[in-house]
Length: 67
Image (cartoon, rainbow, N blue to C red; front, side, top):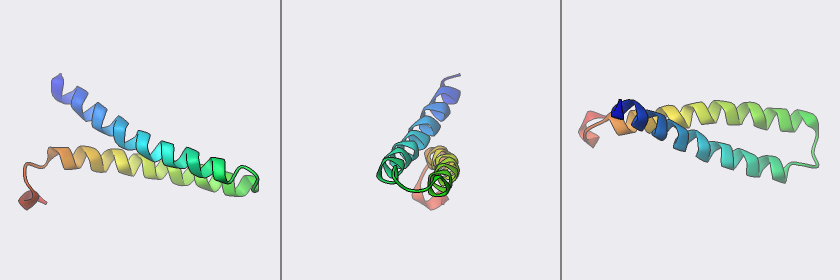
């Protein structure tokens, strides 16, 4: 159970970081077109999934040699 919670925490932190960057980008583009905002939202969704997955994968490796 502990490992599952750690995996969820790492995924949450990675996705949260991507989400915060995306929110900042959306704030900077708030006066732009709807198309640019939707593009950023789609990119943030993909980036959040990637960041969460990479954070969990990195935590699973025991040493840099395993990469």
